[in-house]
Amino acid sequence: MRYFLAFLAGFLSTLTFHQAFIALLHRAGQWPRPAWPMDPVPPLQVPAVLSLAFWGGLWALALAPVLARWGLGPSYWVAWFVAGAILPTLVALFVVMPLKGKPPAGGWDPKVMLGAMMVNGVWGLGTALFLRLFGRFWS
Image 1: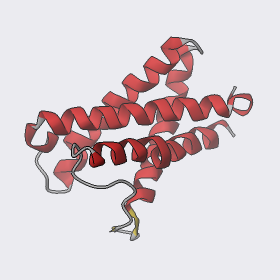
Image 2: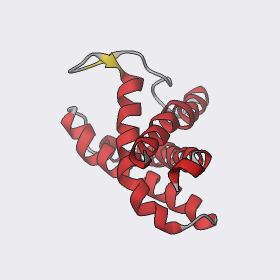
Image 3: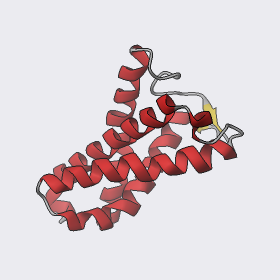
């Protein structure tokens, strides 16, 4: 049950916190693509936002057991923000982008790198919040 809830927390955080923050950045002219993209993604041709949410769930599944050690105080929230800002961002910038034929780190564009860190950090906070909401089932 714990693993399912960790996955669900990351999945839901992607659909809500991650994408809402992208919508705000896009509206402000600071993000190139709109939020909640529905374009099909290979190989299964599922909407891109569901693919992102799936990966968000897997990241939460990987991070939750490690970050659970940070307790329930302010360090819990900081740990989730920092882990979200760093780990998924590094993989996105240096693994996913080159695999998709794009330059690493968006061509070393600071706007791309900082934007990705902020979006993924917000995802981490959302995941932490969902795990808190699932509290009695999670602990």
